[in-house]
Image (cartoon, rainbow, N blue to C red; front, side, top):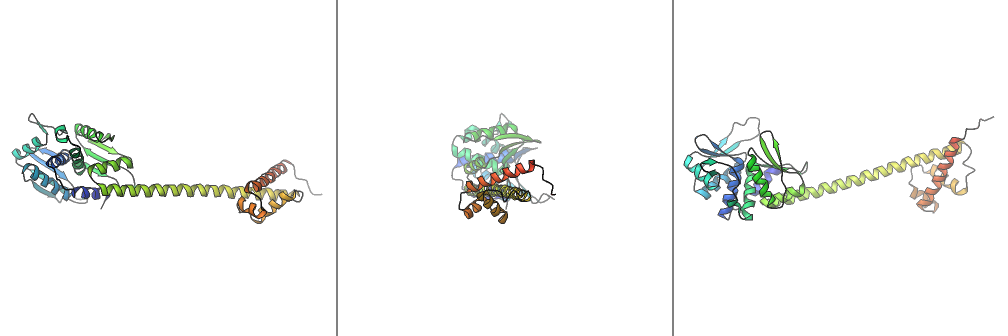
Length: 311
């Protein structure tokens, strides 16, 4: 089951205790998933059978109207069935549209009606219905993305305002013929899940976020340590080359006892870190580093001087 399906399953288990919240959730479902067909029929479409049953129950509880659940099995290549709640009697459809505030002066307008969302609980219920009707969310293991999609620009703008009542700034973009309301940060998505009542999904999201952040932190540390090790090995290789050059030019034996001792130890342990060489000589890391810098400087001077030909 996808993360989005888990969220919707959790939302559909929420019991509706207040009539006002039932109406607000139905308002979200119908506005994002509904359409008025020729002949005055009302149809609410979804790809989730449980959502269809929820919508059927809400229509019955709020208006005493029994719609018909239609299953479309002919979705070849789309991976599953489609469902719709159909209210074919125009009088019943008009009652629902009017009761949800969508019927204004004999014209249907799918806009959010403030009278239905006076209480915070009703605004939460509306957003829950909107997500059930037109929402999706990506697997947080891959990316952070939650969106609501509708072909109705005015509805999308109204929904953005509902989110703003909870302190959330939703973004909007047009994608083909749809208006998409979206959130891209894990914090915002977590807030949305909490608002609509998907608390278990919120905890799962936060667990994924913590694991990803921990994994990224470990990877950064490993990369940093690997880079430091590569630098140390490259420095050690350069030191060995410098000592070999001094040895070749007959300058190694002429070094001071401390420098010669450090050079011989480096040749014996070409990949050892400076801290280990310092411990062997009973001096600090900075002390052995100072000796190696002097050896490197002497080797640099040797490179500038032409090599004497053997007679």
